[in-house]
Length: 124
Image (cartoon, rainbow, N blue to C red; front, side, top):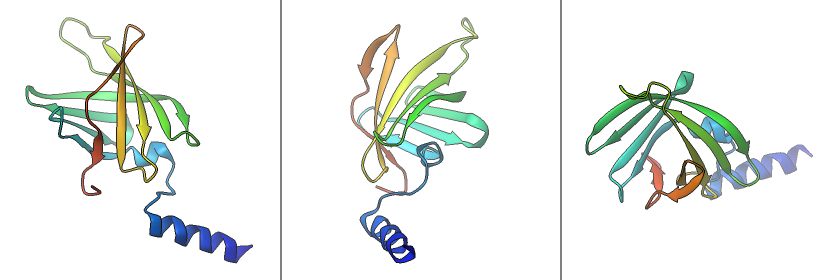
């Protein structure tokens, strides 16, 4: 049994698959070259969004996580001067090796897929 477990871990390492839970894999710097936009997820649910028009300091909250489907539903809470309770719902679909993400943004319940993929900086 121990040999099978060791072999599985070795195969996952060789193929580039992460064994970390999705919420832990989310931490770090994600870049989308198509949209020229970055997400930086930090400890304590802190999120920095960076784009051509500047950056925003936000928080995030994972509302659903499905490790089997490699997806996470996340609320981005980014207060605006005229809308302090502003929040956006995002659905992240991770690639098999967990180094790329497709981001679908929901605006008033309507899905809007963000162009291009986000990739984890340093793991492209």
